[in-house]
Each structure stands twice: as C-alpha cells, then as structure tokens.
Image (cartoon, rainbow, N blue to C red; front, side, top):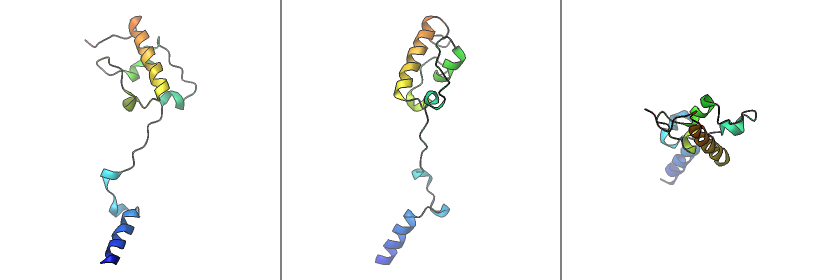
Length: 94
C-alpha cells in the first residue's frame, strides 16, 4: 500500500503527457506592451494607438486585459482621458 502511494506521488511530479491536466496548466504572464518596446511612446493624439487600450463601448480596458504594468496603465488612462477631452476618442460608443 505504501509503495502504491509513492508511485502516485512520483507520477504527479513527473511531467508526462498522459498526466496532463488542463485545470492546472501554467499560465503565461502577460508582458507590458509599452515596457517590451522601448521605442513605443504613448501619444494621446494618436487615436489608432490608444484604441488598443479601449473596448468597443469606449471604456478603458483593465490591466489584466491589456497586460500593462501599473506605471504604464496610469499613462494609458491619462492618454485616453486627454484624447477624449480633445475629441480624438469618443466618451461612449453610439
């Protein structure tokens, strides 16, 4: 009986394809698009660039959806709000 438990424990630690369980798969962490590309500068006047961070209703997407770090998410929020103010982006979808 003790050997049977050890075998199960060893099988659990062994990463074979037969023991693959999609419930416990390793999730890849999102990389901030602004940190990844150092040449990319967020510009509130560039509507196409800002639209990536806004959903179809005009709401700002959260960090978990965009993958942005906290610093750049604050920059994104500020850019979206400025773009709305100068009418580059709409406040809401029609």
